[in-house]
Amino acid sequence: MRIYRYLIPGLFLFAGFLLFAQDAEGDKLKPHYHEVNAYVEENESCLKCHGEVKYTLEDTLYGRTVTQAMWSNLILDRDAYYSGVHRSFMCTDCHSSEFEEFPHSLDVRMEENFGCIDCHGYDETFADYHFEEIEVEFTESIHNMEGFSCWKCHDPHAYKPNMRGTENIKEAIQLNNSVCLDCHGNFDNFMLFTDKEEINVVESHNWLPNQVAHIRSVRCIECHTEVNDSILIAHKILPKTEAVKRCTECHSRDSRLMHSLYKFQSKENRRGGFMNGVIINDTYVIGANQNIFLNRLSIAIFALAFLVIVFHTILRIIKLRN
Image (cartoon, rainbow, N blue to C red; front, side, top):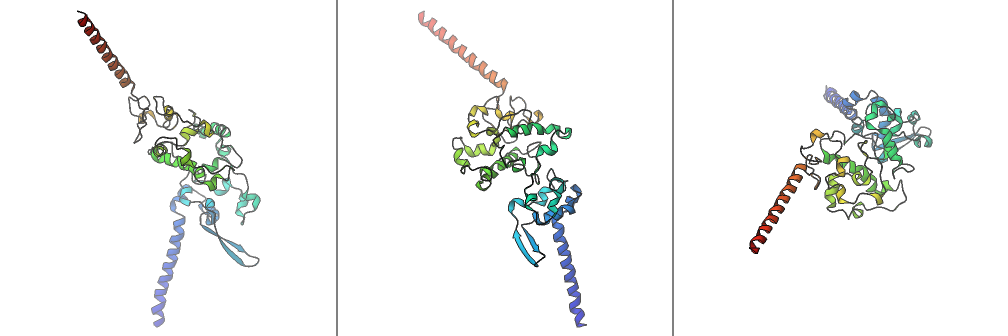
């Protein structure tokens, strides 16, 4: 009887351990993943390493095992992947099937990645996105350099559109600017593409009045790209010598922002009566929200006041002469 006293609690503990282990594994593979992707299990052959902070190398010849840290840039967030635009894909849809062999050979690891145009170009399904024009803009951009591709700004494993149809423009601005600062504010990433010296983003923008407010209210590309009315987000990055520095480019009736930052907003979302309609949500651009009716009314009032002054002056002169 004494043995049963310890055996039964032991069985319960063992069963609890199995349930805990199953739940822990279930946390990695959430039901949502299976709803959006038919290849979740196949993808786990990659994510068992690339979805973790460490991986294990085994030498079957000599029976040795080594645990190493996964490079942070190669760690994929499962939640981000299965909620991104490519959430339905299998890893080998874009990557060579030779990656299934581990450790990966050097030539496989250095394979050329697909660009956006390789899948989305010249396809009527994606015509509204104008990928072909974006490709042309990129080739004319200062970003068109060896080793640089769409992937460097748009992570294909986690990318989600943040401007089209957004309801929180300030959040979208921060997300867009974080893409730029990932390199221009991080010299470790910046030096992978250039031999230039480190740039201090804050110091290089000291000329900008109220710098913090500007960075919070507009995207970097508002001043550093060439406006293109047919593309939602311009991709032709200009040299720094051609960046916008004139206040009137944005703070005017024909604001540059209406052709870039706010052009994705439908007219119905703009406040009626304003020439540019840039009072959207909590955003306010000084000088760009002029009401054409009030402009004309103010001119009329000024003209009337001037005529009254002139008439009064004439009457005073006539009175003095008499």
